[in-house]
Image (cartoon, rainbow, N blue to C red; front, side, top):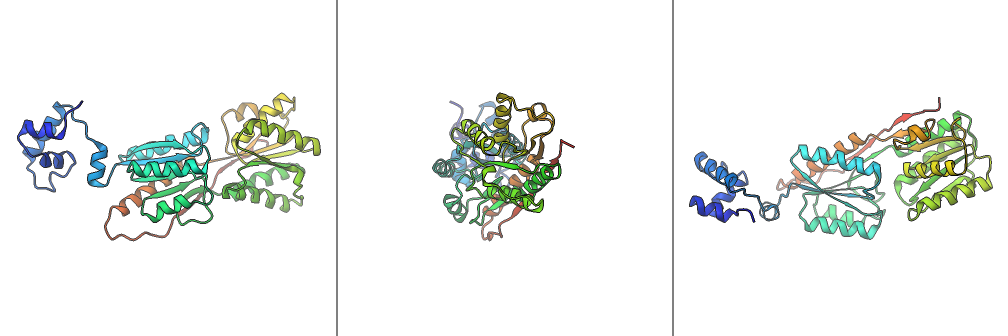
Length: 341
């Protein structure tokens, strides 16, 4: 066990309160002499004192900790986001608590309550719950919270996201311009506003190209067991529309499984047919599908804005009498890479 405040106070013949004020950085504010502060700090170092962060957060209301809830820690996109958010937070003196909701509403709600019980200063969430009831309660309680990557239709919470409709529209428009006429969409989680916007961009691009939205070319994949479902969905599309000549994938995970499917079925995609386009990418796309066009997500910018907004909320929550400002919505463009040109 490390030394306690009481141990340091006894050794220096000071009160525990005085030691606590010095070690919490309030020495000058409380009028404690520089000499006494120096003695306390030196003694704490020599006794290998480690602060009780939970006790400090209860006393000060500040834990210097941020909660991060992701749909999936194993997803390379969210793993990259977590890495960048952690780096941004550390620069501001904050540590990160990370958990995965597995895209399950009840688990997400339980994690929100858990983080609140851990006294985190704020929470960053890529939400799975489209209703957002627990998120709204969190915001209404005054707890700083920022959504990222995924927005909610009925909430007044700050959010950082990409321009899902515009970026999807650009990808599908490119497929059509390159000659694809029967373009399938492979998607998941259609209830999420994010996926609804990507579907809307797909439909708008088809309409502008004079192409009809054939329901046989719509592939909706369930998240649970998605690998098998991708195969079943593609089998069904090729069985009903064998001359499908384009695919738009709303996530990189779906595209990855589709590439596995093409390989296993002996479907040659090396010549750019069928045309392929995907929201975000995996590094393997460069090798397995070098002609697939992608919308590259601005991961660094998403992370920086999310942390910036959350820290602003945290500062405001710690200022007595400050009013809650109008929610901030940041929409960032993706970098389009048309690799089949």
